[in-house]
View 1 (cartoon, rainbow, N blue to C red):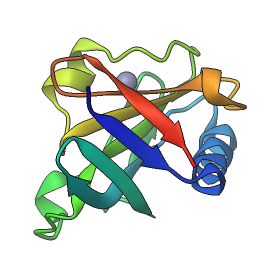
View 2: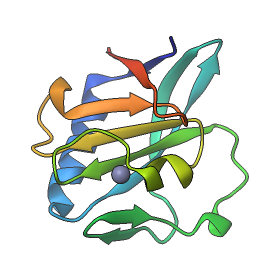
View 3: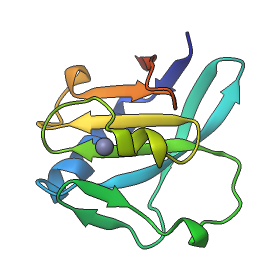
View 4: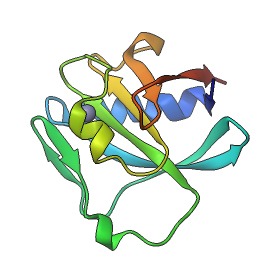
Length: 125
Ligand SMILES: [Zn+2]
């Protein structure tokens, strides 16, 4: 099973960001390193022209630089359900889909998936 490593303070920043736009959704790009089945998140990037709305979040993909260090995205689910929607799986960018759910407080409010919707192990370091 693939593992995703993220620093606790980075996760805290993601939670803060999600809480600040709640009940709208937010989305950030995840930059990181990949080795074998391990993803290590190193930076969060604000996507070009982010769109925040009720029930959707996205960005203008054509404005993205060619940046192969982007391993995936993180977005929020104001509903609190940390499961990917059909659209999340079919319009995802990068290799991993991280979802944070309301109330954006602790490990119970975050989950990470691959494109098939399979849960990956999240390691908070
Ligand atoms: Zn979603």
